[in-house]
Image (cartoon, rainbow, N blue to C red; front, side):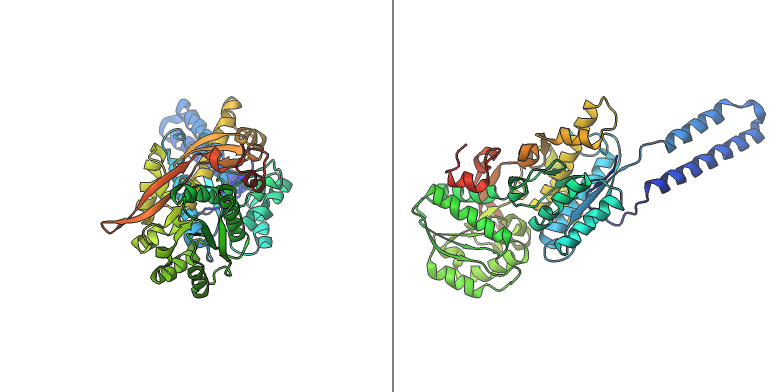
Length: 464
């Protein structure tokens, strides 16, 4: 089997398979000859059973299957590292160590992948898309990985997907949000276990209509690149599908990482919208909240933050009461009380000193989904090590359990996952931030049906 790219190594060193094999042969030969000579001196030529046993033991040890090497690719530097990339790395590090120790609850108690240990190769996603592609090729051609798990940026996953097909390497996207990945193309080797971003905006619009039925004026402030543009487009279209008379007062599109939003906040205040939508993330989101709250923007309008979960730990009660928060799925503060989450959340918080945000949950989804597919394929193969084609066949249309609940690979011909979506509102209670008015939307309510593009589905009024 080729090696797996998961992208989190955390300082581990990895040897080429040929080097490992040679070293094991030398060790086997050394121990075999050593024990035979000692026993001959002590016991004479009549002792045969113990030397043969020891020779068999060392030979069996040398023939143990090599670990599955998994490359993990995530932001380790740059603006995307703190809010998403590093939490993703942390989750991978924690999860792989627990897998190799057999410490994850059912249905994942088997060590490693089907009893075979896993190794991680960590790669930084930062840089241009051409650099991301070069690093991907290096993981496959030089680092000898079996699979790749990674990618936060939509630009990265769109660039890597066709290369994965060219190189014929199983690649699992853990976070990238663009619906275009599987709506504009079809792939054999590429899977995405996280739901795409359309459901964030669709569920946000439904939440607004249900919680604030009198809202007639909306506005947006989103980063001026694909993520921000698509998020606003889907929210605006969803609001108009639900309430055709809705009025848009303004759509502000500041430059990515601009960090200063005084003029945009002034425009938003002047338009007096009932609801403001934002898909800001990371430092931009934190700066916007800290600059807008003192100017009473959150008091005059209901602000919907589709990725607000990632800032809950940093800002706490500095996020004004009544702010609508999303976590890109049933993750973070909205994750269910199941056995897997009772393992993951405390373990992550104990080790890293903060609760896991949605990016960490997305990484665990990808790892456990890949493990589930591998073990399903191994069972189908009668207990033999599955090849890549068998793993891919097992992955297509798979349903599997995660700390966030059940993920269904229901779109993109079985290559795209769907999950429920959750929104709630912030409220400070005894100096702590809590969530109220929590609403959960079933996966089928906020994701288009198979074969239908998100844009067309929204325009149809969410017809199934």
